[in-house]
Image (cartoon, rainbow, N blue to C red; front, side):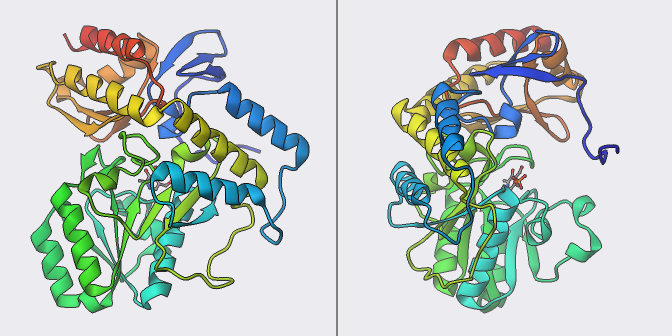
Length: 376
Ligand SMILES: Cc1ncc(COP(=O)(O)O)c(C=O)c1O
């Protein structure tokens, strides 16, 4: 049997990983500023994480949501505390797309409406409704085309206002990333997020903050959207939540009242997933990783802005996009194969940095030195 060949692969096999480093099967060490696509939040194979998961596996790895799972309650409590939203409610699932799918469904159940506003450049996942609100026709199968989705230009308050004015009573939800990731590290402006909040309040629509990539402390705030000073009704999260263990969730405002059967999943919130997510939050809290993400991230952004060859540096904290001119299109590849540094990318020519939140300043400097050599 062959693998279904949907991923373009680098010819590298990772055999070992620790902190912000990985090693290939030949023993070559790499600095990891990609975190397997923003997933590694507390560093690879963190001893507390390994210990908590191993210990849990020896007790009970899985039982379904038909019994009490106290670890879920502990996780909800810790997440409420670390995210600064103790009154919100937690629904656990397994991936970012599933989190968005459930958030949209919840919104529609809440106000009984069908239309969803999403934005140009958005990526929300690959399941049916998540992909329908994703701005990439290439990955939307005919069966996923959805007449209820309205795409508006990003950060355009006039277009948003006009759409609400014309059909506000039909809008179930507005879904937006705090910083577009796949779209190339493009930040939603403070005033745009404030406008979404006020229009959702006025028309009883649901503001969904997709925090799958930009959330979980990456920008220095738990949810990057909150820098606008207004709260979303629902926050979706995944990537950094389990440091590699598949776990996702939605944080739901108190005004939503659940009913039995409204949402559900077989694997969501299983014992191992909760142990992984708790280990991550405990380390984030204990080691003040959000503060570190803000400090090291802002240092990196300031230093990167000094390179005149760079077109633009975007982002906040440890979610950084470096837009390069066409003639420097080779830099990402050279970072990996000449300097052994993993980074991410966005089309057409943006390098994305999404490292673990405990990246050190020395590691940031190592990257800056290599980057400096390549752009000269
Ligand atoms: C902002 C955003 N939302 C949703 C998703 C989908 O997450 P998953 O791949 O876990 O389904 C992604 C994945 O890259 C993402 O970046």
